[in-house]
Length: 254
Image 1 (cartoon, rainbow, N blue to C red):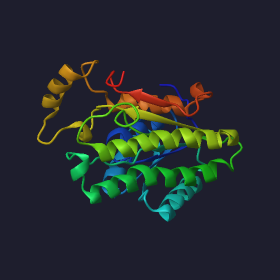
Image 2 (image 1 turned 30 degrees about the vertical axis):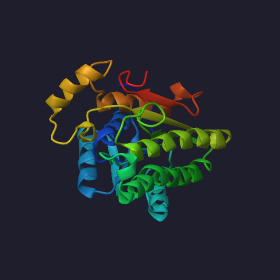
Image 3 (image 1 turned 45 degrees about the horizontal axis):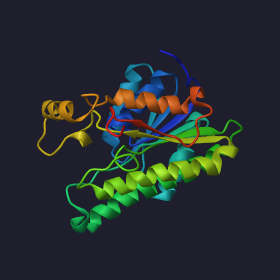
Image 4 (image 1 turned 180 degrees about the vertical axis):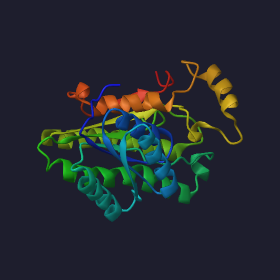
C-alpha cells in the first residue's frame, strides 16, 4: 500500500457506513489521520475501530452538517486534534424517492435540500475558511451522484435536483477558491454496494441480477472503487484537476 497521505489530516462526513466509511478506511490505510463525522456515534465508533484494527489513526466526531455552528466546531476539532485540515470529503447525504414531482412530499424535499445541498455548502464554507489560512491549502471532494447532472430516472426528482446542485456548486466553488491553493472536485457514484442501491424488499442477490441486465458494466461498483476515485482527486496525482465531476457508475451515464 502506498502512503500518499502520510502526515495529512483528513475529515470525512457521513463516515459511519457505506462510501464514507470505505473512504475513511482508504485514507487511513494510506497514512492519513482521519476524523470520521456523522450523526450516529455508534456507527462512527465502529469505523474508528475498523481503522484502529489496521493500525490507523482516527477520531469519531458527532456533527449535523445542516447546522453551521456544528460544522465549524467539527473543523476546529480536526485542527486541534490532528494539527490541520489537508483534505475534506463531504459525503453526508440522504436519499428520498418513490414519488413523481406532483406528489413529492414537501418534508422530503426540504430534508433533501437541507442535507444534500445546504450541508455541503456549510461544510465547504468551514473547510475553505481553514484551508485558506494554511500555506499548503488543501483539497476538497464532494460526493454527488450520477443521478443529477449526468442522468435521470423517474420518481426521484428531489434527489436528482439536489445532487445536480452539488455538482454545480462544486464547479463554482472550485473556480472561486483555486487561487487560494484549494482544489475542489466531486465524485458521482452510480449504483454501489450500499443500502441506498437496494430497492424496497430487494436482497443483494436480487440487486445483482437486476443490475446485470441494466448496467453496461454488468455489476455495481464496490465502495472501495468509489473511495479510490476520491483518494485520487485528493492526492498530488490530481494536482491540476480542478472543478471536475468524476463519474463512477459502470457506464450508466455514458
